[in-house]
Image: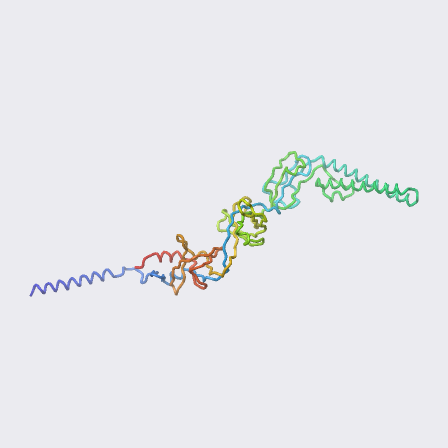
Length: 390
């Protein structure tokens, strides 16, 4: 009888010991949070109000189906704002007024050239002017004599012809001086007040930046158009040239807006516009030349830079839901995002982007218009969804 009582007491004591151990294991450590900030379920993620307030959301909106056509290209000078300057006379450079990198206005002197051609041309001009004056006096006298019947009509016609020849010679001599860059206002003065020197100022025909200079002090130059002394380009307007595939030709037109991107300025898009699409297809590459003009007021873009032209192309078909690119997470060969299903509740969805244009993604499957998607904080939810529930 005593042995049985001891056995019962021992079993009851063991039960109490196990119960105490279970309570000790389930007791929360001091300082632990009352509720976890987030919990993950099989289908949705529930976050605490504090964690939910850190997430940014935006509803998906219906937009016309578009895609972004990217074309690699090269930045070049704008032909309409570019000039190569050579000497109009044979002579020697006596003064350099513009240096490499200088910004000049139209009409600013670039260099001064001493040329004996100007002296010779001016002497011909003065002689032609004198001959014209004498020929006109002779014509006036011939007309008076003809009216007084003291001169035949034939002699009058000869005087008229001589005056016309003298006028033509004077015009030719004046035009030659103008071609030698002698100012017109100087030739318009009375002959005794004209000051024409044997030097000519080589002036900028356009406003821009001196991007090339071969002129040297004391250099002998000739009136050879192939001898370029200065090159001026207005770098506030540049051209991006790219090859457009034949299959995309019908979706691009002159006047279409474009975005220009470069390696030098990651994330920066420069506004441009298509200004030319070639009418000729390259038979070897099956492409046509495309040119975009881009404004460059701060001279950040440089000629010969590599660039990418981005064109938004509207596709045929119904509108699609669009979400910001920041909402998408790329995992292997698929994209995922998170949609709000209730207060502080989110569900993970695999989506199929139809196209990406600018900062938006067009979604073919996985999102409906009006769905609130997480555009900032999706990575936190992704980490939670991959954590198995406790």
